[in-house]
Length: 101
Image (tube, rainbow, N blue to C red; front, side):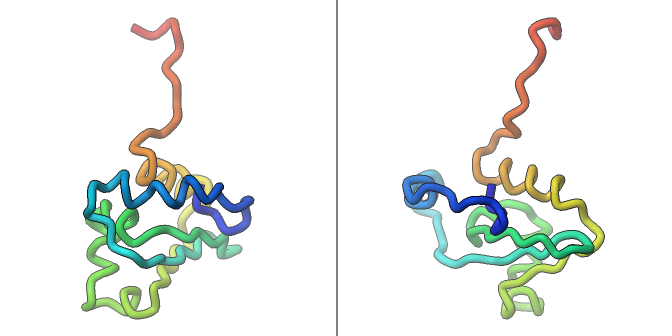
């Protein structure tokens, strides 16, 4: 979810993002460059700023706020993709095994 290299999300997905945030949606996108190969993720600012760490980066005090670009060269793109998925859906999409209590 959110990765530029993946196929684009259906327009119905991006159109529902503002509704999912109950009127607290702030327009704007940030680009995350992740890993040594700089895999790109486009993420709505409102979604990204649910994380206190990214909220701080997105504040006007930081370079990232002006560039709308966050570089994460040491992070794993797969892990960041899972984080982005969670921030959008509030769900990791992992189902518990039927054997687990």
